[in-house]
Image 1 (cartoon, rainbow, N blue to C red):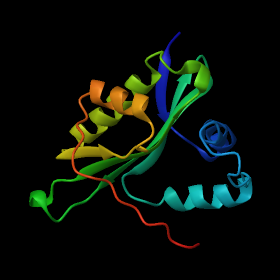
Image 2: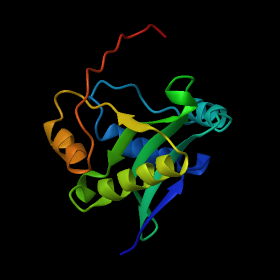
Image 3: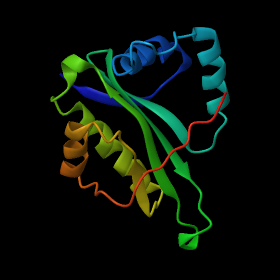
Image 4: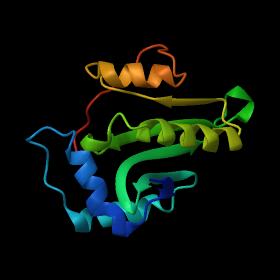
Length: 149
């Protein structure tokens, strides 16, 4: 079994959302392929942003999004931001997440990022242990405010 990491295409959207919905609350909004395809097309124009997939034997089993953000501070060194990490529940604990995060770290190293960050729900203690095992450190606080849309 070989694990491959690649950038997602519009054709991958239904499978990506299967992974996302495994972690969403039961009252999460329904997946709308047409709307999501429009959003995906728009994100393809963003510089240094991509959704990545982990595939094993041709099946998508994990995903993450990575943004390399330009930065005026830190002498212009860019910053990496990981979002939307999801792994098929049956594939957790099989080094898929580790391989995905190592790939994100390599991409950020190649881009000369001064740091790579992610946020995780305070309730996801197993995820925190996983990220710490990869060298991520708890640093500061993450804050959010929900906006209307």
